Amino acid sequence: TARVIFKGKHISSSSSGGEGNNLRKIVSSNDGKDEQKKNELLCIVSGHGYVPPAPAAASSVEGSATDTTARTDKEIIDSIRSSASRIAYNQSGFEITDQNGNLVPMSQTDSISLLTALGLHRIGRSKMEKCRESNNDEGDKRNSLASALVFLLEADAEWQGSSTLDIWKTKVDNYGLLQLDIAWNYLLLGSLENLTDATRRLEIAETVLRKQVHSNFVTLALVNAESNNPIPPLCTIFVRLFLLQGVANKMRNCNDTAAERLTWARVLCQQLRASCPPDRVEILCGAYCVEPSTAISALRKFNGDPDAAGNFIASLRDDEARSAKRRKRQHKLGKCANNSDFVNLDLVQTLSDLLGFGGVNNNTNDGRDDQTTSNLICSGVLRLTNNDIEKSLALYNEIGAQGVLQRAAQLDKDTGIRRASIRDKFEVSDVDVASLVSMGVEEERGRNALRAT
Image (cartoon, rainbow, N blue to C red):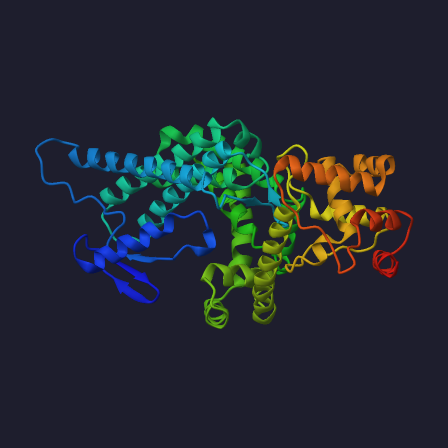
């Protein structure tokens, strides 16, 4: 069923009758180019979505149910690829940020590959989780695990098929986690013929995961766990890694290595479980309206202290708001001269200090402090040099503040950016202010002096 709501009133979507004619008039009136004058329609659709295939009918042909499942898996995989393309090419854009909330550039083609890989991986994991929670017989569980493996291997193929994603394998933990899930699936299936492949994937996973942390991360975590001190929630991933490595080595008769890795997994797991008792998890979930996984992670970070964990959960929301403002700020500044990278906001502050301009505000959301002349100079020279701090200093010394603003304005023009210039009631020029700033005059005093003259 579908309901169409216009200005708070329900309008039938029927093709006949007066209401249908009214709906056609409203829709046709939205064809104009003036976005602000467009009417807005709210369409609520229910009953549409993925409909699982009906159970295979009894048939004398052996394997008919398996064929149906294979076709369904292929349809879902094709749907994920299609959805990834639509998201990547959507005008709203698909953005990737680092841990500091800064935008990371990625082409649309690579975005499609990444979205597809992440989507396939997520479906595979969901199937494994449902299999663990279900009460089906062993045959159904085994079929579900085999289906999950299809999605996991397809995700692995996406990582292998993109040159950009090949570079990202060691920069993010997603690829390492995928290898863990594939090895875990092999274990649940009891697939001894894939033991060699599982061992290889576990080695890849360890390489990727260790590159995401300090070189002494595991050693310090084990020492703290044995001393009953808090350990990072990230240790959960290493528990899975060491457990799988222990089982794999045991099956290969590498008993010493197996015992070592299983011991590491046990020590870390005991400390992680001790720091998040169920009653405290339930309290945090109710108090802060968060998922149990978030509450567990916060408790593990602070060794079971509910007050500290609660404060941390609250701070996460503030961090997300600040990250959103940073992304908006980067979009306002525009891309660098290479038309790929965004301005590194941390370098804006560093360059401002080196040039003696003082502090800058990169977290504002009102737009006023974003376009101070000193900030425009620093962000402009970084755009011109593609975030190279040494080249930025050299370029500034070579062409001065006025030259930086002029070249940055030309870059805006070349890239189609329309930027509102700073003007007060006496039309103080940015270039004039830049001249005074370059001579060591504080920006506000310079503006006041120009305003007075």
